[in-house]
Image (cartoon, rainbow, N blue to C red; front, top):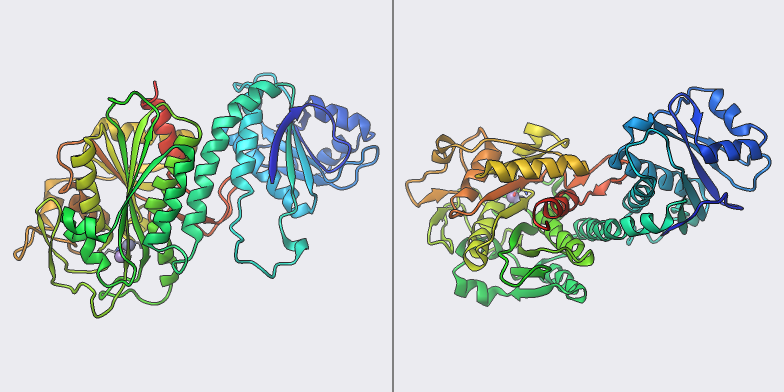
Length: 496
Ligand code: BES
Ligand code: MN
Ligand code: ZN
């Protein structure tokens, strides 16, 4: 689907969406369309439950007087309540409607709205962004789907008087959407396609955008002493990889911001094997690394004025004759030893070495990791918020604000020395699991033992990486949660 922003006019054919404000108040173009259709629009919106609240859509087929069909009346709510996120949702919902209606071209008119706090150009850009995010579908492997069941839209037009500004505003948003889409694609691919090496290959492709990509193979990881990461990987036929991505958009001497991702391309649990029901979900246990790769794409594509490094630890967690056993003791790159009580608590083992490596090599201003780390965070917060942990109030505060601004909400959970004690161990410096309670917290405490002084935050994205529900800008499947949040975090606090 191609998204274009063009000058305001009433299209000759295809689908057309016009705004209606709360109280069934037609926008300027709505009035024109109403006149052209002999009042069909106002009769339609006046005859049912439609009030013009944000999110309502009324579909009118083949209205007299115009060749357009379907004509969509789109509720925008009250002018003063219009927001970026609201307009994104409108764009996403409309694109989906057109896709379902079977039209190949569709347009939405963005009129200036009196009393709105948003500029018209921004409303248009946000609608375009929402359409790009909302129209996404992972359908590479649906080879037998009938054409009439497939999304039909080839072109989606945003029509506005503020074309030039809207296009300028949309450009970076489109780049961010490309990052989100890459993350969704990577997360959706099955584990027979995406393994550590093929995922590293996907990351390498970012070099086209000016990202410097380094791939560390097994031999190098051994040299570096990444015993915790290597222990997880040793049961798999697929060799582990660590990928380092550099985006240098600021002065060479500026310390970077670092992003670290858990990239378990399949988590069977290892010898502590998971139950088979739902195990297929563990193809997206590389979600944290997917976000870091998508974020680096977004930053590079919009040429962000920041130095950022993304580091992802890629392994497959499998049971086999060479697999790590419960009770094994591994030595991490930091020198700290770990008794592996449960081989299914593997993400923290991978991150232990990657966090250590990242801060030692890059001395970042801040370090943020993302991981589908614990089932417990799903129990604690459901999928409305991702879990946030950190050693810096300022950093956590900034992340929380960025999340609210983009509609990716996160909620801080506590760290405390009493929780840290739960992973003390007689046999080694620590064990990789705590007791029954506070599972997400003890996992975060474990990570914190590999953080040496840098401001650090950890996002447990286990509940938000995959969605079973369709939302206007987040179709079901891989969500890309985290890309928009961290892009906004960078834009608001590190590009000024
Ligand atoms: N990848 C899982 C966590 C997970 C569970 C992500 C469900 C998404 C959905 C992680 O590696 C894991 O297995 N964690 C264990 C830890 C336990 C053994 C202490 C868990 O949460 O059960
Ligand atoms: Mn696991
Ligand atoms: Zn895992």
